[in-house]
Length: 253
Image (cartoon, rainbow, N blue to C red; front, side, top):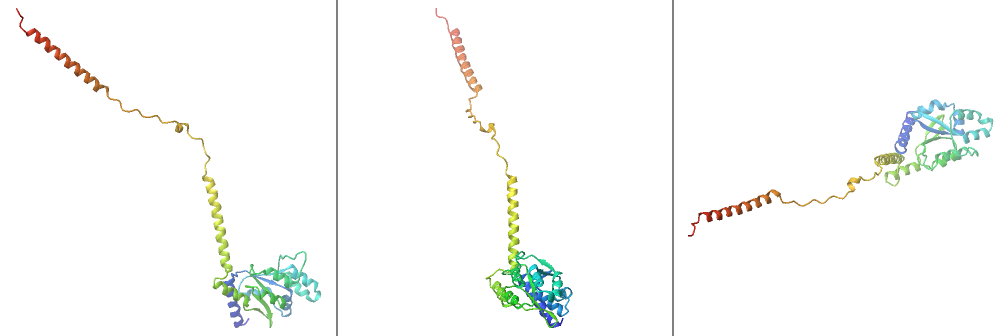
C-alpha cells in the first residue's frame, strides 16, 4: 500500500472515529461482488483488511448475500466459498430473501447504529449508502483496497452536530449511560426507603392517660400551732397578774 493511500485511509478513519464513535474491532459487511473482485485480483481479505485499517476487524455478511451467490450459479462459486467463511449477521429477511444490496441497506437503517463498514462493488448499493451518514465505503480498484472519503451526508451531519442542531452518537451513548445510572440510583433509593419504613404499632396505654392536676400549696401546720400557743401563753400571763394584784391588796376593815 502506497504511503499516500495509507495517509488518506488514516485520515478517513480518524474522521469516523471522532465523529461517529467507530471502535475496534471494525465490523465490515461484504457482498458477493467484493469477494469476486478480491478473487480476481488475488487479494487475501483476511490478511490485508486488518493491515489496511490498522486494527482488528470482523468480517461479516448476511444470509441474503449468500443465497444471492447460490442463485447465480457456478461462475461465482469461488466468491461464495470466501463469503461463507465470514460471520453471518441476522437480517429481517430470513424467510423471504431479498437482493444483497437491499439487505445490506436494511442493516444500516437510517443512521448506521452498529457502525458497519460496507465492502462492495455494487453501484446501486453505493448510491443508497451515500445517503446515510456515517457509513465508510470500501471497494477494490487497481488491485488494491480503497477506503473512500466521507460522503456529503456524513459531512452535513457533522456540521449539524457542531452547530448544535443534532446530537452526535457519542453524546447519545453518554445520555443513555447517564439515564441508566439514574434509573439504578432511583431503584436503590426506593429499596432503601422501603427498608427504612417501619410497621405502625399500637400506642402506649400509659401515654393515653389523662394527667392529674397538681394541688396548690398548703400552709404549714407548725406556724399555725405556734401562733395558737403564743395566744394561750399571753392569756395565762394576764390571768396570773390579776390574781397577784388581788392578793397584795390591803383588807378593808
